[in-house]
Length: 90
Image 1 (cartoon, one colour):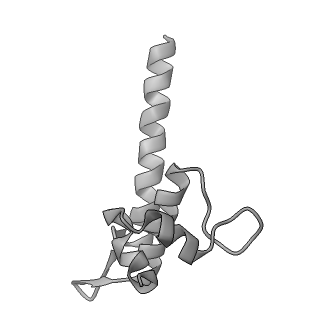
Image 2: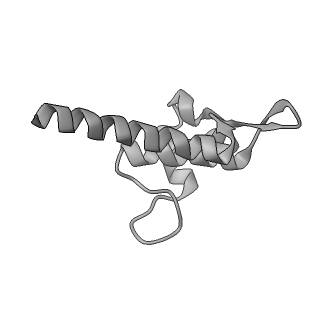
């Protein structure tokens, strides 16, 4: 019974994370506008936030949060963060 409850909660967690991207209209780094896919900074930021959350980090300016540059220096080689971090590469 415990395995069944664990499986259901894992499925619910997966549905919750994908619905956040679906609700915002994002598919990865891109947003659909007038029938075309365009690179969208807010979608890129959402991808970067999800990468940071998997590593138990936060991107922002508050205490205990990484700045955008710090995040990109540490995760710039991650292909998922490539669109977001392209402005921070030197």
